[in-house]
Length: 84
Image (tube, rainbow, N blue to C red; front, top):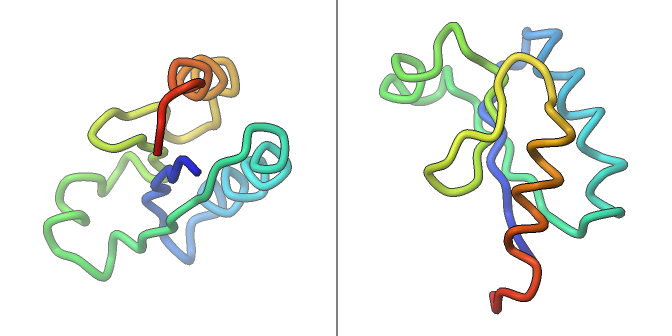
């Protein structure tokens, strides 16, 4: 199953909104979400500070601030048929 990473802040309303929007899509597309608190890692905090929430697939950013369902669907479709 594919795992996407959501760079997140606990006090960020946009972060909670994106996470809530992703949850129903998990059943539809079959992926896991690894939620990472950027404030727990100074390197991540510096990299993603004003961009959170940021949804990534490996090293590829899918979207930030607001969920882009079309980009997410395209990214997941690109992995259809891959092993792993």
